[in-house]
Length: 328
Image (spheres, one colour):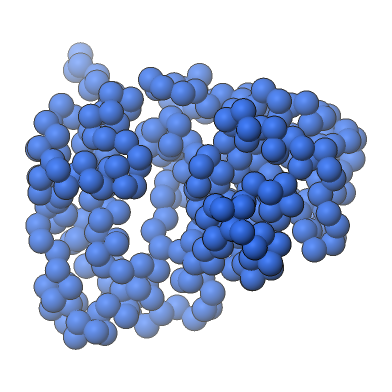
């Protein structure tokens, strides 16, 4: 079992209901159902469960699934995953809503992939919280959960141990986020590497709504690489636009089209990731980490850690630091 100091993430229960989406169920199985300890990755106690055992019908066009476990599997799970289903076709059975409420009340993580968010809405778990779902259904989710704050542009949203995600591959992002929160970036990176997917994607759903490739997206690849190599320098829009041979306005527009976010937000995210790497794998002081990651001072680094990760750099290091292996 892959572990770090702090809370364990071991038992995972994925709920399948009639009308289920095969891909989204497979996402949960791929992230949590494979033992990756042979390559230094984590392994989990993963169970697929349903209100009634036996054959669970999928959406039209997909294969049915045989489920051997009932909802009692959710009672001891560290995380309960509500997989996607044809939410508009039929309501979720009442026992599923009860299982979701009980799991959240005792402190388990709740993850909804795509339309699984509608089950959380029916259970009342989204009231007063931020959430998301597939961009085609965010208006419907807002109607189903009028007390929730629906974020239509996000790939996934976490609020009070409830994670909701957009459609299809965004479920991978959400599941990897949970692994990263509980077991650290190294564990998430191990899983992502085996799945041949990025451990973290920047931007949001907005970049996928328009089908044509944004003009100039490819032309920014070299600049993005340069930015990653120079995170410890001042990366201003005027300087970046000059390097891209664009006006500032054109650069800002094309950067958002290509990445789904602003230059400032992208840089802040990359600096945070760099700081996490340094805290995990080096013995540099917090001041040195702040300087090398581009935050400048320890105070600024602490501010970003508190805002984005709800922890401090020192607490993060205590939980996730891995001493280097001595050379033989």
